[in-house]
Length: 138
Image 1 (tube, rainbow, N blue to C red):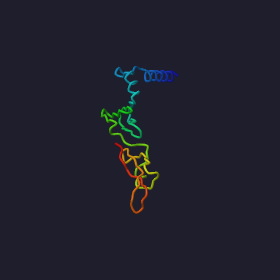
Image 2 (cartoon, rainbow, N blue to C red):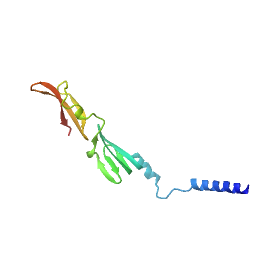
Image 3 (spheres, rainbow, N blue to C red):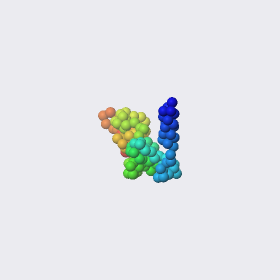
C-alpha cells in the first residue's frame, strides 16, 4: 500500500512540474501580438498577400509574414507585390481565338501567372467574324 501511495505522489509531482513552470524570458507577448496582426506564423505555414484584384503572392516556410498590398516575407526574404501572380480567373487560353459577341467586350483572365484580358475583335477575312484576342494588362 505504501508503494501505491509513493507512485501516486510521484505522478502528482511530475504532473505539477511538467505542466507548470515559467516561460522563457526571450518570449515577448507584445511582439507576438503585432506579428499575428501582420500574419506571422510558424511550423512551415503558408503566408499569402492580396496584391490587388485577382493578384496574390504566397510562400511557405518555417517563419513567414504577409501584408496585403505590400508582399510576403519567408525566412527573412521579402517578395513585393510586384511579383504577384494571377489567381481566381479563367485561363486566357479558354477564351482566346474563340467566337465572341459583342465587339469590344472584355474579359479578365490569367495568362500563365500574369493578369491579362481578352477583347472581342472583329476580323475581316474569309469568315469576317468576331474573336476573343489576348491583350496584356500593364
